[in-house]
Image (cartoon, rainbow over all chains, first blue to last red; front, top):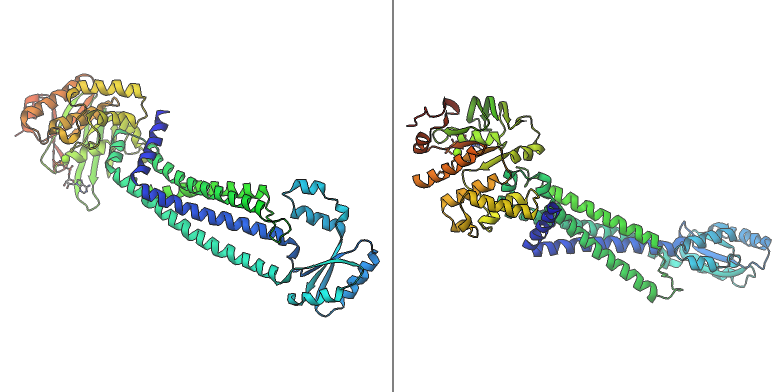
Length: 291
Length: 227
Ligand SMILES: Nc1ncnc2c1ncn2[C@@H]1O[C@H](COP(=O)(O)OP(=O)(O)OP(=O)(O)O)[C@@H](O)[C@H]1O
Ligand SMILES: [Mg+2]
């Protein structure tokens, strides 16, 4: 117990000696973790909102179930003859139910309340040129088998590619800042080890184990990176909760992100930050404390 | 207690600090290690506590095979030894009491034990009145005594002292040596490196003389005269 309190005491002493460096390190870890957390969440939200539009679906024609399935099939066949259409896929009511369950998997209340019988079957249209979607709307106008038409439009296309760009650039920045954090931790530890050179020498002389000598440094690194990541994750959760409540449900940007994904993301980030701290401290004090 | 068999120490540049040293020091002995500057006294002691690693030969200290001992086990060896280095390595920002207590603190000793043990050690080296002085407020002899007290904190079986009377006047030197003899009488084996002939000649102990990294003479108690 006394050993443990010695380690904690020295961790705090080390950190108090270089407050600015510690602060900078925490900030760098925070920004890096925040970037990772928010972009991955954003990507998940966009994916949840666009499941329907992936796999090259450009137009969804919801069918009126009061019309017979034969009429549905006829419509499909006539659509297939249009030159601007590449494929038409029939999407049954049960497939619609499955899709709905995926889309709203984090909203169990909604899932239990929905009358799946009311979910319409649909035709999923893939166009040779996605910008031709207006033509399809014109042609379907007034057709009794059609209940409603939704198109991906170019907005969705752009949103999807934008998200990818966002994820790539944010990850690059997260990596760069993470690297900066790594360097900062290494320098903080080396500075601390250097200023305690004599102390460490004496500890060696009286037979303190090398784990014991190292622990304050390892603790410091793990603590700093864990603090940074925790604040980042906290901020991330806060922002998501805030947006969930502030944006109207019908908007294209439903904040549909499952809690289990968020928890998973949080745990992975926290675990990574511990590993990050361990690794940085390993590199930081390997040479300094080795003689 | 200490056994060297055909031990050599050659540094990377090729300079030979010790060559083919063989000797045995028994439990409870008091041994002076003498020789000119550069003869290898410090190197001899550093080999014993694995600060240096011998190029050749075998070394046994307090029942441990020093040469074969893996690096991570060095602390086990050090815990059996009290080490007083040539310069007393004291922490400037800690007072006498805290400098001695430091050795106990880093071993995870309980607070009560730290307090009682540190006070006993302060008594032993007669530094009670200087307990709250900082190293720069202490004389050279007092600093050495702090260093000796600290080296005794974890009850070593062997005490290795490198020129503890290095910069002290004869009177203070005798004080330090008396202290070491007192510790020796309590059962601790003591090896002390020195080039102080007046002490060696007066105290009549076993003397090992090094010259150019070799044992030039090894005289049993009382028969040695250092010129
Ligand atoms: N780390 C080292 N690297 C290279 N050479 C060394 C090292 N330590 C000691 N030596 C050399 O080994 C020889 C013995 O040195 P050592 O310090 O053991 O002598 P000493 O008897 O303690 O001298 P002094 O009385 O001046 O303290 C010297 O020639 C010295 O230059
Ligand atoms: Mg020396």
